[in-house]
Amino acid sequence: MIFYFTASGNSKYVADRLAYATGEKTKSITKCLQTGQLDFEIPSGENVGFVCPVYSWSLPSIVWDFFEKVHFKTAADPYFYYVTTYGTISGDTGRAAEKELLKKGFVLQAQYSVKMPDTWTVIFDLSDKEKVQKKNKKAEEAIDSVIAKVKEQAIGDYMERELPYFLAAIGRKKYEKDRQTSHLHVDKEKCISCGLCAKDCPIKAIEMQEKHPVWLKEKCMMCLRCLHHCPVFAIQYDQKTQHHGQYVHKKFSRILYEKEHDLR
Ligand SMILES: Cc1cc2nc3c(=O)[nH]c(=O)nc-3n(C[C@H](O)[C@H](O)[C@H](O)COP(=O)(O)O)c2cc1C
Image (cartoon, rainbow, N blue to C red; front, side):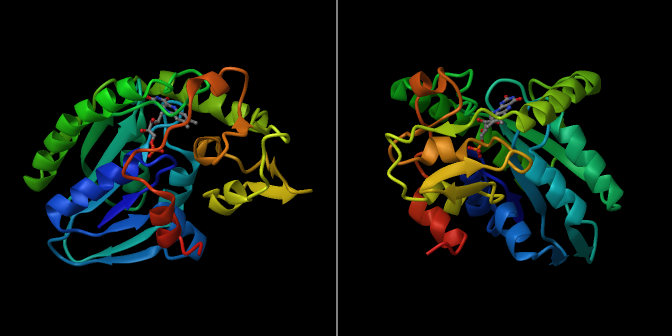
């Protein structure tokens, strides 16, 4: 079983490739939390993988939440592995996942990383489609290598661009602070009031008020899903985001997302 969280499709794509190569099923962490399906029986011989993006050198808040609430019943000790998709620095994600799993009495046997386009367009520019395509092409090699290692149930830390714990802790603290003052906002002139942002938000942190989205800052994890998926690019974080483009992995369609999350 492969659990994943995705906002823009990178991690979903990696999870899908792993599923295809290993014959195992994928499960959306967003959906597990939304439906309360958090107890899993793992048949003997099955691996348990997690594929998630890195946020501020650490785990996205939804992934912390998932690790806290999930329960695994296992016949034997399954092969647990964690894959982070990242844009620049993979931070402390593998070790964080390892610690969370240990609290449940399980050992994370391997941790991997795959460098992909950086969806934090508050800083990174994804407006050049050719450059983005090149990055995704390069990611294929890293994905192939993760698949090969997972298939042989390799043990170890294969993450690139890691950070020492104390630095990652600073990143996480800053992220928690930034979330409280998130600058996500909508251009009301451009907004077509379709409500997709509110409908799609993984943690229901957007409310439509007077036909326009309003962000519940105490909930929002700034995954930028709303910004990247808005059909008219009416959602911005700051002045820079409007020049840095929207990004959704090419294999990740809205129809697919709706199907997986029963939004139709
Ligand atoms: C809020 C936020 C914080 C991020 N922080 C980092 C980071 O610290 N290091 C990094 O390399 N990439 C960072 N990224 C980029 C994502 O981890 C990366 O693009 C990932 O592949 C996105 O996965 P997804 O498409 O499955 O959502 C961040 C993205 C967001 C939205």
